[in-house]
Length: 508
Image 1 (cartoon, rainbow, N blue to C red):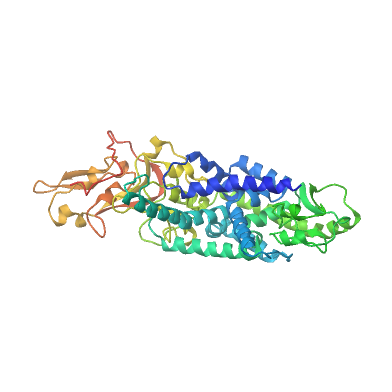
Image 2: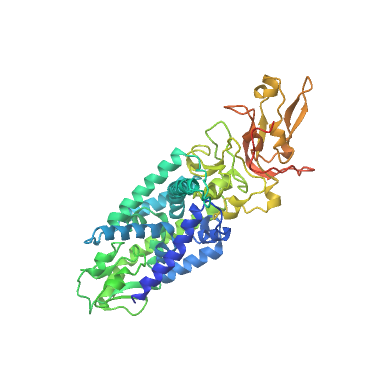
């Protein structure tokens, strides 16, 4: 059965590398359909109510145990990479059986679900393994890749080779970086010294699958008649779930990595059908655990049911503590839907070609930290003919929009502050905002002395930020976009003016 580990490693690589490359690809050359791999993740599947994926993952877990954790989950594979590196540096690196931290792991799981049902996604955002890895890739790995590209481009351009070009780094967001680096260190240290400790102690997905894996059709078992209790399997078990002396395997922590199968010299470990006729000793062990298993399984099923129902229908308004209403990405529908379904994985932030999407600090309140919002700056706005963010969102926090619908989706409304406009303060001609409005929502009307001044038609405005990004008034623009709580369709302009994302000067 040693071939099982090789198959698992190959599959893990085939899942992990495309996901990693998709996050750090700043050129936009990788096909967008790669984001389909991100939908085969537990939390995105639950939040988007993708029953096909949910049923597939359930069957996978009930047949093969926690194979999801060792093969499909990018954070799980990341932990394996760190653990593998630790073994390379420490030749005598080995694991030892430890008792499961059941009180801690199931308390965190219950707390995550209770907080989510109560109307806050804060713990789910922080602890979802897929989103945690996404933040690693977006906030840590991607800047390193872009930095390396820019350094190489500088050297090559100096020799007359312009194959590479300088790429712009995304704006540094302190809170996003602090959270990302903190979890990177936490997961890294736990993986370096204790293998899958994070997976089996902190991760709510790992705890939930631990409940399911107790009843999986196939499991790792030890053949007592041939086992010599040499301890090789225990030393190679990164989940620390094998007790070689008692010849037992904790199914709730086993991630089906099959490392133990490849190290046993007596072929005493088997990956076999669970419900075959047990030996006498095994029968005693099973009966002793039945009550605990039944309790945990029932509790887990109840929690999962409540969470699933809540994901589809949650009430309660969330108010931003900031005075300026946040601007949600196109396709967010409304604030409740967006806050409930978005896990802050940062994929849309990574893929936004204009880098107008930023991780939120307190724009959505404490429960919305790390969720994306639009932040306009000089020459940076939401491109009129771009819907990439809604295309790649794996949780359906952003509804997939057709291009014609995206052009009419109102994510905000422009607000004009007349007393700050240069036409009013300096009595000189401008009109930059009107020239760069793609929907004619901002237009010029007669003012005085032959001058014209901007006016906003709310029904035509989609909140793209073209006007705000081009306004010459600093530090606070005379025209800015205010987010809306419910995204609706704006009226279709008679003749929309399109504009390119490369803008020279202020247009006047």
